[in-house]
Image (cartoon, rainbow, N blue to C red):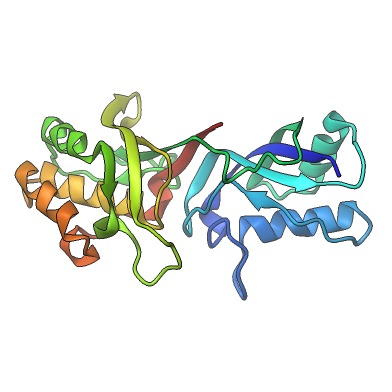
Length: 243
């Protein structure tokens, strides 16, 4: 059976994350329902590159599916976009080796969290409005302490089914753009709620509630109660997947 990778983007506001779940709309379920109709009421399971939390968006997301035979990739994407709701867009489709896996073969994942400090009705859905002062230099000093392989249990949602909370962070930095600020972090893998908890903790450092030197002990504790409250999900984007 030929395997294809499909690149999409989605606005997560209407979904309870990527992962299919009972009694709540998800991106995965929505796509599989569209495929079910496209293939004459035949189920076509898909496998995503990872989970995103409720309300979190994806600028670049990859899933794979196995089909009975080869398809015209351009026409396939065209039909998908006709069926998808406005909140999901398909960009490209590529045939890959049958053993290539959207989740397990991803080498690096990058997230961005956006913050704006001037009230803007056109940013509210995709950026967190935070009108108070924060010290971005202090936050970047702290962000450097996140690099390399560490146990990020202090920033992970509790009572999940993950086997390990160890991740390798390749880069972590606060930057500015024309709309305000964003935090970009890249790692080999992420835990549920990890980025939002990290951003919340760095914001507490930037506003003086915590100190840079507090972060190593927070990490070492491997206890979610030691880190700060998670920031809202609507400012977070899965930005890029690298294979």
